[in-house]
Length: 337
Ligand SMILES: *Cc1c(COP(=O)(O)O)cnc(C)c1O
Image (cartoon, rainbow, N blue to C red; front, side):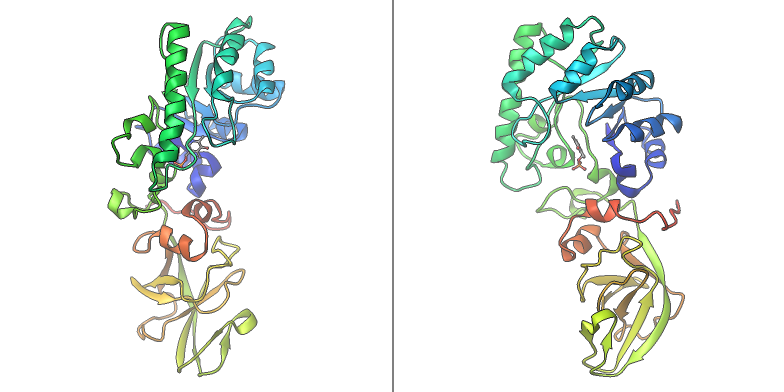
């Protein structure tokens, strides 16, 4: 299932879901996201990863044929009081992340409770989420999958058949190792990899065969010459140490360029890299183009994407590609090519 929560990581959920029509289903975090996909005509299974939190939400989800994660006793109660006989429920177990899910030793009791209800769900499946699959040390992930595997075995012994399972996010799915199959399950749940960023701490996206989907681009709107010793931008945190040429670009933190992106971070102008100079302001950034004398007003510039890996920019800003993607502001026009 393609994970398209948070507006498909800033890419546009309906557009991405339609583009990824090879997916067997989709996953989102919030009910509103699931209903919006249905309203956009997406007919395949949609899993609501956080489940529902009221009887009204449950009714809306069931009416829209949304598959539900169940991770909390309050959600079991809601299901017991509803006719969930058309529903596919994913029982979420916490195998070590301590975020959402029942502890493995509680899972079979929850399963029994859900199946005993009058309007018991059509199908119960089992999922977990990996906390550290992006790391080079695979031991924490192996510990999580071992806990999951023994629960699957117990489930099979109790129910007569193993459950349909889901384990891997992008990192769990792509981490090449002997344990690879063990980190996937029947349904994989890739998010970030679909958008072309690397889910693995030690591997670049290109090495994994991933290419960027989003390119955040703008243009040069002004050029100026700055004499040595003068500062650029708010706080004058960047100072010219030589006669410098500064390009002003129409992109700032109101567009999603992180304000903490430091001077020296790369920006692509005319396919060549130039360093950010001074603070990111709301609508603009300054770039030192002294070494790119041909740069002209109107020239296209890339903040990340094609030619400039988002993971590299994110690392310079002390964050991850996920956050840069999600923070691209509504005012930025989305153009499909
Ligand atoms: C967001 C999320 C995913 C996708 O994670 P990526 O790291 O983007 O691949 C998968 N499963 C769950 C439960 C999630 O919350």
